[in-house]
Length: 266
Length: 302
Image 1 (cartoon, each protein chain N blue to C red):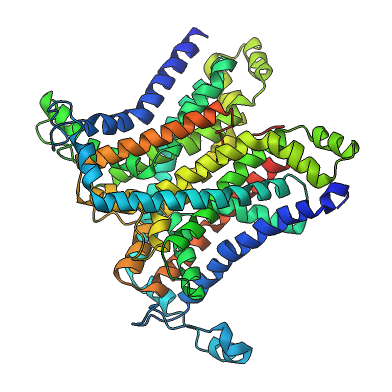
Image 2 (image 1 turned 90 degrees about the horizontal axis):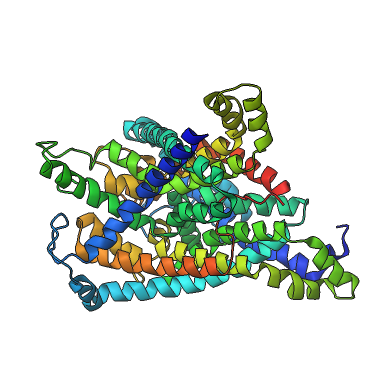
């Protein structure tokens, strides 16, 4: 299968060049001296300095970080509980939970955003940081659930059963055996929820009010005005943050795969 | 209810808490969307006349049922803009899904055929972009395909074209954006379907004299169809309602329903119209959503 091996090498090279080329160009041009994107005028970090002096952008970054931390924490707790519940088969309530968990993974964001907004208006909650956190926790917990559930499905159930046979209460077996074994996936779930929240523009636009503007909302309004080196610089910083999170998750040995699909085969 | 641990308080809470949370924050809002879609727009805050409020009691609610309006839905039928938006979304999402499959398949196949120890790393490399900002990835393409962007700059400098290629602000740009942004969603299920195949089947076909290409078309490809279906749903469903990509990469004539919904809501402040657009979009996507959920449940049941 020599032809096959050459084909595979070409497919990998072309595929990864397509996936990473555009991102690398954004990073490269964030260090461009010139304001014009197409003209390379030498290496410079001036745009990073401009970012630092942009008070609006810094405030938006603060709002985004708070929202991402809070919503990812909530989503991790809820998603882990849901994953624990869904690893047991059967039951009407479980079926309902599973249906509700999978839908937000693919539903268009405009529909989710509109639905969240109408809920907050109906409840009379003033839109702002709190509503962004609630909306983000709700849609990111679904991703956490899928990641943690994949891990739990692969775990050896007999370990938990052995702990119970040895006299541990089911609750204690859960805390002392199952959860520690699932910890890497729970951490990966937290990191994914965090990055999804930090990145979200559509749902945040619906869920937030005049009081709270997130970083993607600021970036979006700048991007609409055109390509600027400042956007490249802030993008590079965000990419670096996500890169670090990914490395951390990889170091934890967590299955990052299949955020939207259960690849576990037991 | 058979295992003793199933009755433990912890297990019950594990089921109850997320279920209640999702019912309150995910299910209820959709009832509200349906409700608002049946109300009439008003120049107030919020900008719709309430159909019925819980506080008024059941009798008042029943009275108001008579006033439920389908005005917002009638408007959807009367104005060609909506139909064009729905059809435009379906068309662009279908083209983009097919192209994503075309780009993702060789990549997934190559990863699945790589030496076992390298597979996890390669798969992670293919999925990692999903973790990076969606907005940044779309922005990267603005930088590339604008009239004065990097691709046109390179083409003109090399003398290949005299005029910049018009890609930005066209439907083609939207398709490129969708393919690029959703590629990891297609690679994942394809890889799972390809990697899980029994190599003995391919070897048997080859031993019986089938050339490599025929082995692919008669064995590998048919066995990967569940992955093709799952990946296509993962791309197509969200792509139909996509807002950011058509708004940033498309032209003013790129009609997609997510963008129309956004305009009704944020620009026209016509909440009933936006809600009606959402409900019709949901109804349109419902069969595919159900199919996708079934695939997920079957996978989870294994």
